[in-house]
Image (cartoon, rainbow over all chains, first blue to last red; front, top):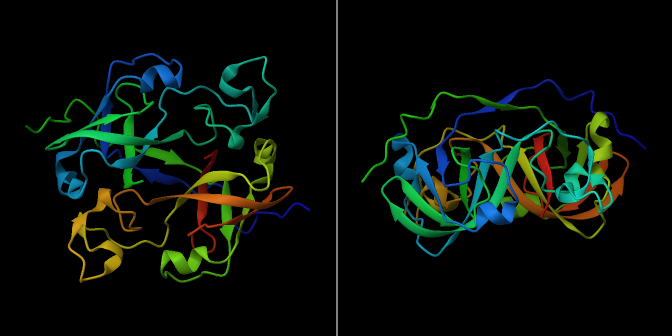
Length: 136
Length: 136
């Protein structure tokens, strides 16, 4: 039984502004494990620096970021583009090619220096806009 | 040492459209634990239903949703609005009152029926737009 969503506004636009940007050496789309292997810096907007208070080295945060270089998406995809694996729905995958291009990764804080967080485990490309940082 | 973010476009708008909506009995802002105590339904847009293939009852998914009824934010807040707890930066908290109003919660799938997921553990208010669903 399909439940219609007509009562909701499908064309509603939900807009955000970046709060930070990622800096690392990964400029080209590659396997997430490869991007993740090097620490990244997250450069936070100076007007938002107070919001970092309470973050601590060694603790985990959830980073939401914009997958600005992801490609056209298909609703059914081979996991990690591996044609030997059966296709699955995009919402059961973490593929960057998805209807709303948001990445969500839990990372560990290695350092905090004013508006710069150094983190381990982030699989975002260099210059990706960050949309949110939360306690994990 | 503050690192400037001038080279990046602070006014860049990042926009999304809802992929689904939350249905539950929580119409008023209340403690997350209270919202979470009842199962919610996630009604997925009919044009995106194929994207649910591969999701299974019992598995965990990360749900990103729009906190459309959150209030003005402050960069420093008392955790859960509890004035007896010291203020902390918003990025070290999961407060709904934040620069970009996105909630991120890991939930367990209780049921899947066409375009309707029934989930346990979601702390979104009734009718909240869903922005993304990912394998957790």
